[in-house]
Length: 313
Image (cartoon, rainbow, N blue to C red; front, side, top):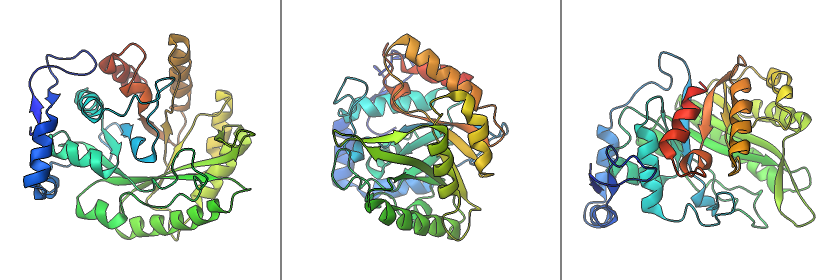
Protein backbone atom coordinates (compact mmCIF):
# COMPACT_ATOMS: atom_id res chain seq x y z
CA UNK A 1 0.00 0.00 0.00
CA UNK A 2 1.90 3.08 -1.27
CA UNK A 3 1.88 6.11 0.98
CA UNK A 4 0.76 4.30 4.13
CA UNK A 5 2.29 3.73 7.56
CA UNK A 6 1.22 0.84 9.78
CA UNK A 7 0.50 2.94 12.86
CA UNK A 8 -2.16 5.55 13.59
CA UNK A 9 -5.58 6.17 12.15
CA UNK A 10 -8.60 8.43 12.13
CA UNK A 11 -11.50 7.14 14.12
CA UNK A 12 -9.65 5.27 16.84
CA UNK A 13 -8.88 2.04 14.96
CA UNK A 14 -5.10 2.45 14.92
CA UNK A 15 -4.30 -1.24 15.26
CA UNK A 16 -5.80 -2.12 11.92
CA UNK A 17 -5.77 0.99 9.75
CA UNK A 18 -2.59 2.53 8.26
CA UNK A 19 -1.82 6.23 8.32
CA UNK A 20 -1.49 8.05 5.00
CA UNK A 21 2.01 9.24 4.06
CA UNK A 22 1.40 12.40 2.05
CA UNK A 23 5.06 12.75 1.10
CA UNK A 24 5.04 9.29 -0.48
CA UNK A 25 1.85 10.04 -2.40
CA UNK A 26 3.39 13.26 -3.71
CA UNK A 27 6.59 11.46 -4.73
CA UNK A 28 4.56 8.93 -6.70
CA UNK A 29 2.46 11.64 -8.33
CA UNK A 30 5.60 13.63 -9.19
CA UNK A 31 7.83 10.88 -10.54
CA UNK A 32 5.35 8.18 -11.64
CA UNK A 33 1.98 9.74 -12.52
CA UNK A 34 1.30 6.72 -14.71
CA UNK A 35 1.07 4.67 -11.50
CA UNK A 36 -2.54 5.82 -11.07
CA UNK A 37 -3.68 4.32 -14.38
CA UNK A 38 -1.64 1.19 -13.68
CA UNK A 39 -3.31 0.79 -10.28
CA UNK A 40 -6.72 1.19 -11.90
CA UNK A 41 -5.95 -1.52 -14.45
CA UNK A 42 -4.82 -4.07 -11.85
CA UNK A 43 -7.60 -3.27 -9.35
CA UNK A 44 -9.53 -6.39 -8.35
CA UNK A 45 -13.16 -5.76 -9.28
CA UNK A 46 -16.51 -7.06 -8.02
CA UNK A 47 -20.13 -6.89 -9.18
CA UNK A 48 -22.10 -3.77 -8.35
CA UNK A 49 -24.35 -5.83 -6.07
CA UNK A 50 -23.26 -8.75 -3.92
CA UNK A 51 -25.43 -11.70 -2.97
CA UNK A 52 -27.59 -9.67 -0.60
CA UNK A 53 -28.52 -7.22 -3.34
CA UNK A 54 -27.78 -4.21 -1.13
CA UNK A 55 -25.30 -1.33 -1.40
CA UNK A 56 -23.44 0.62 1.29
CA UNK A 57 -21.39 3.40 -0.29
CA UNK A 58 -19.31 6.03 1.50
CA UNK A 59 -19.41 9.43 -0.23
CA UNK A 60 -16.55 11.95 -0.33
CA UNK A 61 -17.17 14.14 -3.38
CA UNK A 62 -18.07 17.27 -1.37
CA UNK A 63 -14.66 19.05 -1.39
CA UNK A 64 -14.62 19.55 -5.18
CA UNK A 65 -17.73 21.69 -4.84
CA UNK A 66 -16.06 23.77 -2.14
CA UNK A 67 -18.34 22.14 0.45
CA UNK A 68 -15.84 21.42 3.22
CA UNK A 69 -18.05 21.87 6.27
CA UNK A 70 -19.56 19.32 8.62
CA UNK A 71 -22.06 20.81 11.05
CA UNK A 72 -20.47 23.90 12.53
CA UNK A 73 -16.96 22.78 11.51
CA UNK A 74 -16.50 24.86 8.36
CA UNK A 75 -13.27 23.26 7.13
CA UNK A 76 -13.65 19.77 8.55
CA UNK A 77 -12.95 18.09 5.20
CA UNK A 78 -10.04 20.35 4.21
CA UNK A 79 -7.24 18.13 5.56
CA UNK A 80 -6.72 15.61 2.74
CA UNK A 81 -4.56 13.14 4.68
CA UNK A 82 -7.14 13.04 7.46
CA UNK A 83 -9.95 12.54 4.95
CA UNK A 84 -8.07 9.70 3.25
CA UNK A 85 -7.43 7.99 6.59
CA UNK A 86 -11.12 8.20 7.43
CA UNK A 87 -12.04 6.81 4.02
CA UNK A 88 -9.57 3.92 4.30
CA UNK A 89 -10.96 3.08 7.71
CA UNK A 90 -14.55 3.22 6.47
CA UNK A 91 -13.71 1.04 3.44
CA UNK A 92 -12.09 -1.54 5.70
CA UNK A 93 -15.26 -2.11 7.73
CA UNK A 94 -17.35 -5.23 7.01
CA UNK A 95 -20.38 -4.53 4.85
CA UNK A 96 -19.03 -1.38 3.17
CA UNK A 97 -19.31 -1.93 -0.57
CA UNK A 98 -17.49 1.05 -1.99
CA UNK A 99 -16.86 4.75 -2.33
CA UNK A 100 -18.15 7.76 -4.27
CA UNK A 101 -15.58 10.50 -4.93
CA UNK A 102 -13.93 12.80 -7.45
CA UNK A 103 -10.82 11.91 -9.45
CA UNK A 104 -8.29 13.42 -7.03
CA UNK A 105 -9.56 11.35 -4.10
CA UNK A 106 -10.07 8.15 -6.09
CA UNK A 107 -6.55 8.50 -7.54
CA UNK A 108 -5.12 8.69 -4.02
CA UNK A 109 -7.18 5.68 -2.92
CA UNK A 110 -5.93 3.74 -5.96
CA UNK A 111 -2.33 4.50 -4.99
CA UNK A 112 -3.10 3.45 -1.42
CA UNK A 113 -4.48 0.12 -2.63
CA UNK A 114 -7.78 0.76 -0.88
CA UNK A 115 -10.15 0.04 -3.79
CA UNK A 116 -9.67 -3.68 -4.46
CA UNK A 117 -12.97 -5.59 -4.40
CA UNK A 118 -14.86 -2.33 -3.89
CA UNK A 119 -17.50 -0.53 -5.94
CA UNK A 120 -15.86 2.63 -7.29
CA UNK A 121 -18.23 5.44 -8.25
CA UNK A 122 -16.95 8.59 -9.97
CA UNK A 123 -18.58 11.98 -9.38
CA UNK A 124 -19.44 13.77 -12.63
CA UNK A 125 -20.76 17.31 -12.14
CA UNK A 126 -18.97 19.53 -9.62
CA UNK A 127 -19.28 22.89 -11.41
CA UNK A 128 -22.16 24.20 -9.31
CA UNK A 129 -19.96 25.51 -6.55
CA UNK A 130 -21.54 25.91 -3.14
CA UNK A 131 -22.80 29.47 -2.68
CA UNK A 132 -21.99 30.61 -6.24
CA UNK A 133 -24.43 32.65 -8.34
CA UNK A 134 -24.10 29.93 -10.99
CA UNK A 135 -24.69 27.06 -8.55
CA UNK A 136 -27.60 25.63 -10.55
CA UNK A 137 -25.77 25.75 -13.88
CA UNK A 138 -24.02 22.64 -12.67
CA UNK A 139 -21.42 21.93 -15.34
CA UNK A 140 -19.92 18.47 -15.71
CA UNK A 141 -16.38 19.22 -14.56
CA UNK A 142 -15.61 15.83 -12.94
CA UNK A 143 -15.49 12.33 -14.38
CA UNK A 144 -16.76 11.85 -17.92
CA UNK A 145 -18.45 8.59 -18.96
CA UNK A 146 -15.37 7.69 -20.99
CA UNK A 147 -13.20 8.16 -17.88
CA UNK A 148 -15.38 5.79 -15.86
CA UNK A 149 -15.11 3.22 -18.65
CA UNK A 150 -11.36 3.69 -19.25
CA UNK A 151 -10.43 3.36 -15.58
CA UNK A 152 -12.62 0.30 -15.04
CA UNK A 153 -14.76 2.05 -12.45
CA UNK A 154 -18.17 0.61 -11.69
CA UNK A 155 -20.62 3.53 -11.79
CA UNK A 156 -21.01 7.29 -11.78
CA UNK A 157 -23.08 9.80 -9.87
CA UNK A 158 -24.50 13.18 -10.81
CA UNK A 159 -26.44 15.85 -8.96
CA UNK A 160 -29.59 17.38 -10.47
CA UNK A 161 -30.98 20.40 -8.62
CA UNK A 162 -33.98 22.04 -10.28
CA UNK A 163 -35.11 25.56 -9.45
CA UNK A 164 -38.09 26.63 -11.56
CA UNK A 165 -36.90 30.25 -11.24
CA UNK A 166 -33.30 29.65 -12.35
CA UNK A 167 -32.51 29.13 -16.07
CA UNK A 168 -29.28 27.36 -15.08
CA UNK A 169 -31.35 24.33 -14.15
CA UNK A 170 -32.28 23.79 -17.80
CA UNK A 171 -28.60 23.58 -18.77
CA UNK A 172 -28.05 21.01 -16.04
CA UNK A 173 -31.13 19.03 -17.10
CA UNK A 174 -29.88 18.77 -20.68
CA UNK A 175 -26.33 17.87 -19.61
CA UNK A 176 -27.72 15.24 -17.26
CA UNK A 177 -29.75 13.63 -20.04
CA UNK A 178 -26.70 13.41 -22.30
CA UNK A 179 -24.59 11.96 -19.48
CA UNK A 180 -27.24 9.29 -18.88
CA UNK A 181 -27.17 8.46 -22.60
CA UNK A 182 -23.37 8.16 -22.61
CA UNK A 183 -23.32 5.95 -19.52
CA UNK A 184 -26.01 3.71 -21.01
CA UNK A 185 -23.92 3.40 -24.18
CA UNK A 186 -21.09 2.01 -22.00
CA UNK A 187 -23.59 -0.17 -20.09
CA UNK A 188 -22.54 1.48 -16.85
CA UNK A 189 -24.87 2.52 -14.01
CA UNK A 190 -25.36 6.21 -13.27
CA UNK A 191 -26.84 7.35 -9.96
CA UNK A 192 -28.92 10.53 -10.37
CA UNK A 193 -29.49 12.63 -7.24
CA UNK A 194 -32.49 14.91 -7.95
CA UNK A 195 -33.90 17.79 -5.91
CA UNK A 196 -36.37 20.59 -6.32
CA UNK A 197 -34.41 23.54 -4.94
CA UNK A 198 -35.15 27.18 -4.12
CA UNK A 199 -33.18 30.20 -3.01
CA UNK A 200 -34.21 31.74 0.30
CA UNK A 201 -34.30 35.46 1.12
CA UNK A 202 -30.59 35.24 2.01
CA UNK A 203 -29.78 33.91 -1.49
CA UNK A 204 -28.75 30.48 -0.21
CA UNK A 205 -29.95 27.44 -2.12
CA UNK A 206 -32.08 24.98 -0.15
CA UNK A 207 -33.49 21.63 -1.20
CA UNK A 208 -37.22 21.09 -0.73
CA UNK A 209 -37.76 17.77 1.07
CA UNK A 210 -41.55 17.90 1.10
CA UNK A 211 -43.30 14.83 -0.28
CA UNK A 212 -44.59 16.76 -3.30
CA UNK A 213 -41.17 18.17 -4.20
CA UNK A 214 -39.32 14.86 -3.84
CA UNK A 215 -42.04 13.13 -5.89
CA UNK A 216 -41.65 15.69 -8.70
CA UNK A 217 -37.87 15.42 -8.67
CA UNK A 218 -38.03 11.63 -8.97
CA UNK A 219 -40.50 11.83 -11.85
CA UNK A 220 -38.32 14.32 -13.72
CA UNK A 221 -35.08 12.42 -13.18
CA UNK A 222 -36.58 9.07 -14.17
CA UNK A 223 -37.56 10.35 -17.62
CA UNK A 224 -34.21 11.80 -18.66
CA UNK A 225 -32.18 10.37 -21.52
CA UNK A 226 -32.93 7.90 -24.30
CA UNK A 227 -32.80 4.89 -21.98
CA UNK A 228 -33.37 4.37 -18.27
CA UNK A 229 -31.87 0.87 -18.31
CA UNK A 230 -28.75 1.91 -16.39
CA UNK A 231 -30.23 4.75 -14.32
CA UNK A 232 -30.42 4.56 -10.54
CA UNK A 233 -31.84 7.21 -8.23
CA UNK A 234 -30.12 8.66 -5.15
CA UNK A 235 -32.89 10.17 -3.06
CA UNK A 236 -33.33 11.90 0.31
CA UNK A 237 -35.71 10.83 3.00
CA UNK A 238 -38.64 13.24 3.04
CA UNK A 239 -39.30 15.68 5.89
CA UNK A 240 -42.02 13.34 7.10
CA UNK A 241 -40.56 9.82 6.80
CA UNK A 242 -44.09 8.40 6.67
CA UNK A 243 -44.42 9.93 3.17
CA UNK A 244 -41.59 7.86 1.71
CA UNK A 245 -43.67 4.83 0.74
CA UNK A 246 -45.97 6.99 -1.38
CA UNK A 247 -43.10 9.05 -2.80
CA UNK A 248 -41.12 6.00 -3.92
CA UNK A 249 -44.12 4.72 -5.88
CA UNK A 250 -43.26 7.41 -8.47
CA UNK A 251 -40.66 5.25 -10.26
CA UNK A 252 -39.58 1.65 -10.78
CA UNK A 253 -35.91 2.67 -11.00
CA UNK A 254 -33.71 1.17 -8.26
CA UNK A 255 -32.74 3.73 -5.63
CA UNK A 256 -30.35 4.36 -2.78
CA UNK A 257 -30.88 6.77 0.09
CA UNK A 258 -28.54 9.71 0.58
CA UNK A 259 -27.37 10.63 4.03
CA UNK A 260 -26.55 14.34 4.06
CA UNK A 261 -25.51 16.26 7.17
CA UNK A 262 -27.60 14.74 9.96
CA UNK A 263 -26.40 16.99 12.77
CA UNK A 264 -23.98 16.52 15.65
CA UNK A 265 -26.24 15.68 18.55
CA UNK A 266 -26.87 12.02 19.49
CA UNK A 267 -30.62 12.68 19.21
CA UNK A 268 -30.30 13.94 15.63
CA UNK A 269 -28.18 10.97 14.65
CA UNK A 270 -30.60 8.44 16.15
CA UNK A 271 -33.50 10.16 14.36
CA UNK A 272 -31.64 9.98 11.03
CA UNK A 273 -30.86 6.29 11.47
CA UNK A 274 -34.51 5.57 12.17
CA UNK A 275 -35.57 7.46 9.03
CA UNK A 276 -33.13 5.42 6.95
CA UNK A 277 -34.21 2.16 8.59
CA UNK A 278 -37.83 2.66 7.61
CA UNK A 279 -37.13 3.78 4.03
CA UNK A 280 -34.75 0.87 3.44
CA UNK A 281 -37.71 -1.51 3.69
CA UNK A 282 -39.32 -0.10 0.53
CA UNK A 283 -39.15 -2.31 -2.58
CA UNK A 284 -37.17 0.06 -4.84
CA UNK A 285 -34.64 1.11 -2.18
CA UNK A 286 -31.45 -0.95 -2.44
CA UNK A 287 -29.04 0.75 -0.07
CA UNK A 288 -27.36 3.82 1.38
CA UNK A 289 -24.86 6.41 0.16
CA UNK A 290 -23.63 8.37 3.17
CA UNK A 291 -20.65 10.66 3.57
CA UNK A 292 -19.95 13.36 6.11
CA UNK A 293 -22.12 11.95 8.89
CA UNK A 294 -20.13 8.70 8.85
CA UNK A 295 -16.68 10.10 8.11
CA UNK A 296 -16.94 12.91 10.66
CA UNK A 297 -19.25 11.71 13.46
CA UNK A 298 -19.59 13.97 16.48
CA UNK A 299 -17.86 11.45 18.75
CA UNK A 300 -15.00 10.88 16.29
CA UNK A 301 -15.56 7.14 16.07
CA UNK A 302 -15.70 6.49 12.32
CA UNK A 303 -15.75 2.72 12.66
CA UNK A 304 -18.74 2.74 15.02
CA UNK A 305 -20.69 5.17 12.82
CA UNK A 306 -20.05 3.07 9.72
CA UNK A 307 -20.93 -0.18 11.50
CA UNK A 308 -24.21 1.33 12.71
CA UNK A 309 -25.15 2.36 9.17
CA UNK A 310 -24.23 -1.06 7.78
CA UNK A 311 -26.44 -2.63 10.42
CA UNK A 312 -29.46 -0.81 8.99
CA UNK A 313 -29.17 -2.81 5.78
